[in-house]
Length: 353
Image 1: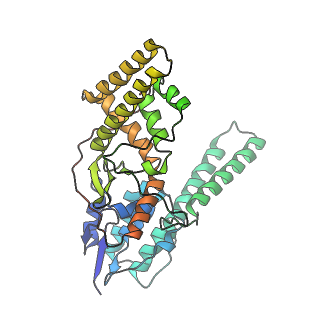
Image 2 (image 1 turned 90 degrees about the horizontal axis):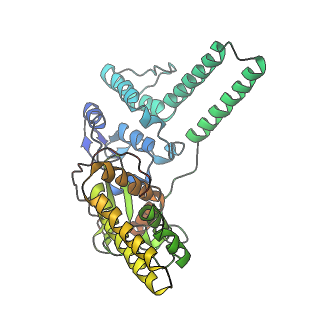
Image 3 (image 1 turned 180 degrees about the vertical axis):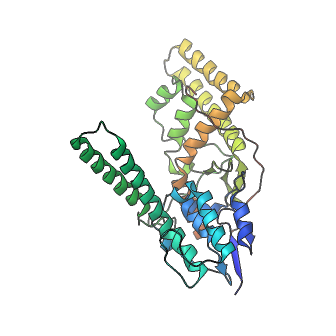
């Protein structure tokens, strides 16, 4: 019975655990394929570390419903991979965390990834909390009780996160999402009120505020961001569907479109009894902010990329639902995935853009 490991993020395939281990330990994150966005980081990790046997995956996504939107395992990826590597190397069938024995190594892997590692992590965190309470000599009895209650509450909240059993489903819903506007086209801004436009034009964060308003309209959700690999997917058109782009290219195009909308509306204000001086000042600020961004100054460009991509990423779930709905309706249409190298710098914070 042949086994195959497949990276659920990028579809990298190998017959050996050691190769998938090296793949996951690379400093540069692999670029997600579009279908991987429906899973949490922890679900992707588990699905990658458990092999296929004769092209049949030995775990079902339903078994990982408690890891929906979870990143607890991925935050401890190094320890998990080393644990599984020891199992693979020594051919052991006994769990080092709870000493339970299994007849198959695959069953032991599933046991650790799906349940036991999380249980062990929870116990460690509880012990650390208890140590802090015991060693703090300034805490009176009432405070100790209060802290224990808070600790239990925090542990319960953590367990609720881990054991959240709501199924993540991006399949077709009763109310079908609209097909998005192609990324190369202008957004639909018809739902933004005149009052909101007046506020946007005099705002110190006019570009990011406008993007947030634009993405409130479902038809404008044509971008899916993967910050880890500094890339994303954009809806191209009805034929090509979604294509992969560098994060910087997505942000560059976004800034160009935002500038155009801002200038168009600013020009429209001339005929609405607005003070000419205010209109002129707003136009200059629109131009200045774009020039500051486009001058390739990393102190401005990098944090602006963080803000723009963050706004897109906040809408990822809705954008993924739309992409999935379109794919379900057109199963015979191929999703184009253009592999591009991304050379973006680190991300910082920025205010006033």
